[in-house]
Structure formats: structure tokens, C-alpha cells
Length: 78
Image (cartoon, one colour):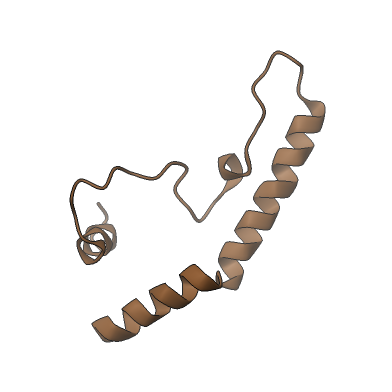
């Protein structure tokens, strides 16, 4: 895959999430609703992002890196 193809897919996914991302979002919403229905008043409510499998829970700081550098770091396991 060329760099241009990768960037095209990245733009496409930002506009219309791919099915695996949509499923992750939908199940996160369902799980957070179920947990919030059964929680006590003094506990903090669960958010859908608490149950995401495919996404990071909180965005990492930018550190001044370009998007391609962040992707390379991810691919190398960092």
C-alpha cells in the first residue's frame, strides 16, 4: 500500500467509520447504559469509551509528531 492510499483510507475512515469501529462504538454504548442502570448514586457514571476494545481510552498527547510519525511508532509497537 502506498502512502497516498494509506492517507486516502485514513480520510475515508474519519468520514465514515469502518464496520469494526462502529461495532465497537455501539457495544460501548450498550455496555455503558447497562452499567449505569445498575450503579449506585455515589459512583461515577461509565462512559462508552470505557468499554472500547479497538480504540485508546484517552488520546495521547501530540508531542509535536506528524500523523505519519505516530502511525510508524504504532506499527513498531510503541
